[in-house]
Amino acid sequence: MNSVTDLVPGIRAFRPFLPAKEFETSLRFYEAIGFHAYRLGETLAELSLGTHAFLLQGYYVKEWAENAMMHVLVNDVQAWWQHINSLDLAGQFGVSTPAPPRVEPWGLTVTYVTDPAGVLWHFAEATKSENNEA
Image (tube, rainbow, N blue to C red; front, side, top):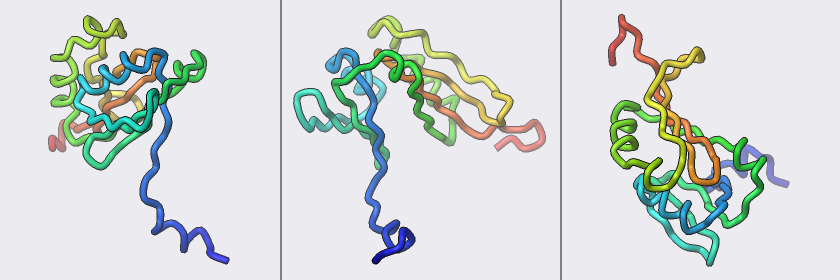
């Protein structure tokens, strides 16, 4: 019998499923941000940014969607903010206006984006201190 230590090297990916209230709208939302969509069925798609991916599904439970969060740790949150802000996601998709980056008490600088189903995305980087501007 294999131990989990033996099995871990064989893991190819972790891909959470995220809900879509209106699948086509959510798909267009993520494509607008820059995700590559690979359809796996009528209401299922893998969405990726480079090697990082999740599965978008045409399944929606309000309480689940509005409590789901994704965390994306980046090197330059300001650049991500400029990209996201330039897209007018609120105007195009009727979502909340993305929040500009702010320093959070847990040590990250975060910009927040909410998708059409209510899933909250955190684009974050380690907060630069005044003594250590990276």
